[in-house]
Amino acid sequence: MSLDSLVQQNKPELSRLEQTLGYRFTDLRLLQRALVHTSFAFENAFAGEDNETLEFLGDAVLDLVVGEALYRQYPEMREGELTRLRAALVNETHLATMARNVDLGSFLSLGKGEDASSGRNKSSILSCAYEAVIGAIFEDGGYATVREFVLRFFVPAFDERREDMLIADAKSRLQEALQEQFNEAPSYRLDLEEGPSHQRIFTVSVIFRETLLGSGSASSKKEAEQRAAAAALAEYDQIIARR
Image (cartoon, rainbow, N blue to C red; front, top):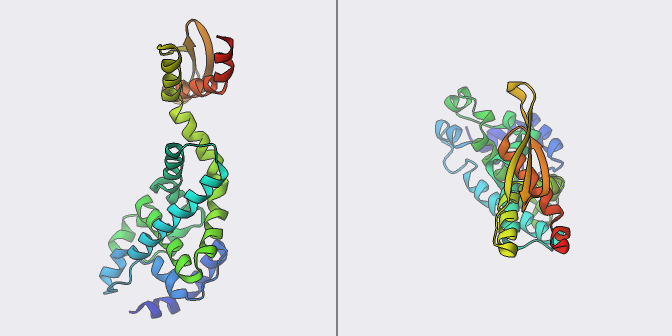
């Protein structure tokens, strides 16, 4: 079996994927190759025809496009924050989610063993295949085309991921700010624990010098503390102004 014969065999499925992606390939072999996992290539003697090099290319393209878009959308953010936000958008978990959103797993060519072990739903395989598809679009249509594709799918997640990142960093950022200003750290108080054992909700307050800075609720104490710290940071300028 050759790559060309695989394209002919899978033409209806490839056309369906093109419609989902919103991009029609000039060279359909590029899309097919992006879907060929190493396990399939090994079993079918596809020397050099798996998706690994396209994945490498797509990873580089994704870093550039997402990095540029974040730089332009959030000019106030520092380099370290932009780096962390880009990492949250192009990591395995998020890329696998993007792949599942377009049902990419159902189009993959996997080896028999990988297929039998639920390879079509493995985050590592899905994320790599998604990067390979991006690499294939770049090869087929150039930078402007792949940039439009990436922005269409990724920009809607920018604000959500930024909020997640800010909440996750909130405790350390609040402590750094108070240590720098007052040489003291805040404390956290568990105010409320409610709900059934499998759906507990914790409410936590962050206290500084006997003053309530913020409160937050979540399904874990750690996340409730992060949300309380995030609420405090939102009001931090006013806190400083009052002291």
